[in-house]
Amino acid sequence: MQTESEAPRRTSPDDDDELLRERVGTCIAEFCGGDMPDGVAVHVVERRVTITGQVEDIDIAQRIEKAASTPPGILGVSNQLTTRVPPPREVPGQPPLATGIRADPAEKPAGQINHKV
Image 1 (tube, rainbow, N blue to C red):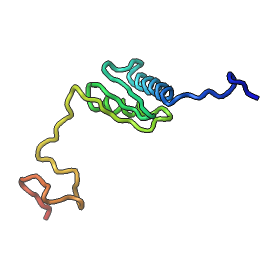
Image 2: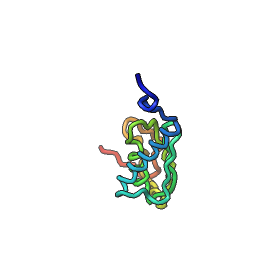
Image 3: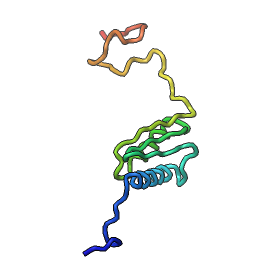
Image 4: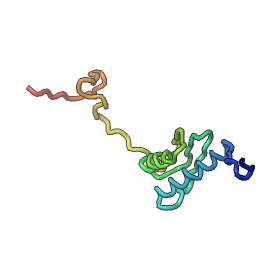
């Protein structure tokens, strides 16, 4: 028969969230060379992670999001990071993402059209 001290310890959902927050912070810190990036905060509610703050560029924001999703028990990650460097603009006159058979002729940029003969 188990005594109270030997019984399995049950934690509250808040304790689980705090443990996950620490694990996510550790994973992000490992990605960033051992230290959590300045200005980045991690929040966990019901095993869902929200990352807020500001980072240098979109690549770092995406890699932090990926690192935050690695600990077991995470149900999802909401990346609300902003960047100091704005993402690159699309070059004017480039064709839309849909090309080939899925392309809509109405979405092509104006200009000369060259056909193979």
